[in-house]
Length: 114
Length: 111
Image (cartoon, rainbow over all chains, first blue to last red; front, side):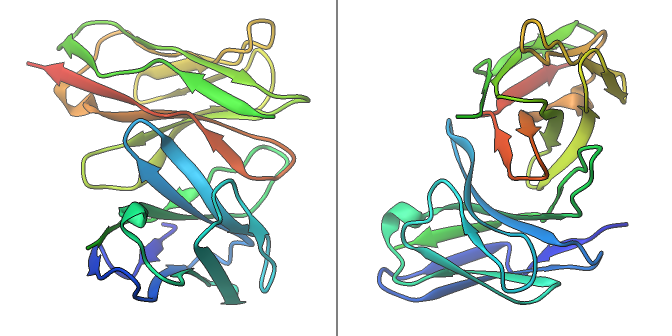
């Protein structure tokens, strides 16, 4: 089974802290994604990565950065956490395929910024 | 730009009722279409997909048909169970690129 593992299920951080969310996948997938999920807004793409050291901004990159030094790991960084970044964060990975390959998701990290 | 619109919830049904969750999309070209399901406390998992017009995706009694003429991909099930209670997301993907998700529809099934 494909496994996408996010390092924490729940996190509580203070305003202004630098926050790292880690995601690891074990299926050698080229693409990795970070989304945030908010009620009524669905999933919004923050950043995605085509391959190692390659990244592209999604729809809401402000206040976030990412790092992908190894193929299996994709980190989301909140440079200076703010209360409006309180959300559920979902990581996903996949290998792109002409037949529309599915994305596999981690269980999510619920981040609260106080 | 590309986008997905799905009906707002929550949808509340009794067990064994019929389900339809509407999904329409806007996209140029030929996207692939997906339905994902999120059970309480979990991440999203693929429910079904269709990659070209008139394809029907099916899984666990759920079905959806890719209708290019109406740009729709409605999710249907003939008889829902309590265990189907979850949030359902419609999504599209194109050119090996990023996914676009709808806002999600919460389904509550009562015994």
